[in-house]
Picture: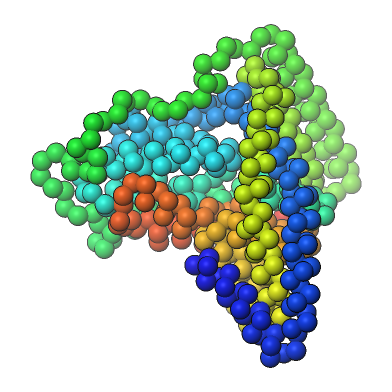
Length: 439
């Protein structure tokens, strides 16, 4: 799909320009878009590297372990077919906890491990069980509690005055996508067409039934679980900083209440304070976890540099393709054709390319978002909306293909429709949240 999308943009731009006299504009857009992409990457790199360094501090400080302990009782209820001490349960917990912290690179190995272990419990080789389908639905629409670092860095590089303003709307959108996907899972599994085959007699005949089972128990628990407790001075430091920030927040809220309506005060505080408080909070987690904060940040920053290098080709290729497509006039034609339909729900057609590409390619959607921010401005309604759309859900087709392939699953049953319904709910939630916060 992504190959066809990119090919269509490039060839469509040239063909449309050939018949409306804009071939010169397309040629110029090629060079300008390529140069703009590199400038954008330079602005993106610093913030992204720094934030992934902070996330490494928080992870080593015990935040990942805390989420792991909190998720365990919830997952036991969601996955009653999975024994509490089975390796699949431990892998799922670590996967979802990593996703919630925005540690996508760390989450993927746990997700692959979880799917392989769930396949061992399946009585039907190659057919997804209810547990596998639900795990895929949660993963493909996973709630990320941390700020969308890459998006915020890109908004800052594009000149936004409030890069963090989309954090709360993104939380609302991704919560809508996850809750809807889980609800769709329970509703769709009742339909006869999605029912699993009748259970075979005798012991389970899953893909790994003949293999030697691995030791039970949670896997990959972080070292932070076994860290010593923080000393009195660390606790006193964290408490002092927290108290000072709380007093400052109250003081600022009282000042703003004298100048702005109540709803605007909340929006202003959310926009200005959320990200600095996040930075301070992550550092304090590291202090309480007895982490050598600078050394941990350097290790995380190295990973951030690898992420930046990995997305550069995607970003350049997509930005150039969209820039040429826009310069040819074909994008304006598409927007004019779709706007009467999308505007009825308050969704500007200019944001549609990001919504269509998000389930297919994270890098592709990121690149189209970057081009949209450059064209419409990062703080415009369209700019805020596309920024929120990118964080509203995961790359559905990639997640399903990767995880199903790792487990040898050929029939996903109702996983795809449930995930796509979740994606749609995330887009609608993003639209509604942006109208509340930015309209």
